[in-house]
Length: 297
Image: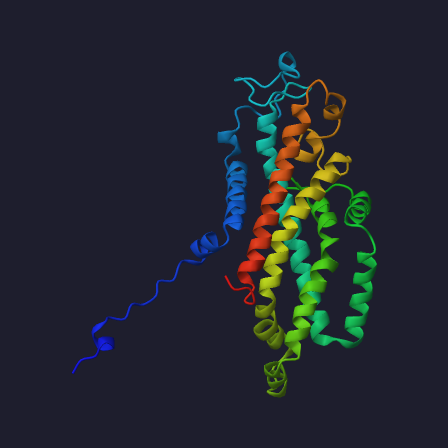
């Protein structure tokens, strides 16, 4: 005698690819990711996409209004604003990713070391982090970049990247440290110590894999902060300098003098900064929700 259960074939549930799963369950994050990918493609293929050389000066086209020839107008030197925005995405993404990676990775390493060893090491590290946290992000970045000056390597100001990354250290360190403290008290960590495993093995095999999720979330979130900091420092004259295309630099100088006569010099770079920051914030928030096992999707 056959039963119904024996006649109905068992279907293996189809598991979506992680990227597709993220796009389906986090549509806002997927939208942010789409903007980020578009920015990255524009930065990589800028010579093919930009209609003009961003450094070419044309005094016959100074402050030209948006037209078919110059889609979003020109600046006070006759340079095409659209081309400078496209090339400016290179500066924004390069500084943003490098500063976020440096600050987040450094903060994660310090946080894990502080949580694992505890005692005097933890006390000293937390004291230094408290000092760094006492300064506003932009003020600390201003002080660092003013002291270090410029150091251009492969077209990127390394000192500017360091200045933006330093304020991230204590904030990432606190988040990672709190996660590492909870992991340090788990039984398998005590078992690893009892088995005679080295500190390095315990940290990299048992603690670091469990703090990857908060690290990735902070890494993506602070790209937006880094882009905003780079734009702020360039606006204040301590970041990227002329004639390098930079969104923050496009908002300063002549743009402030001609904002009534040529508002497009300020509006479109400002929109680019806002869109980039919004996209990374959307993606970071969605990534946090997607990686959090406590949130049921």
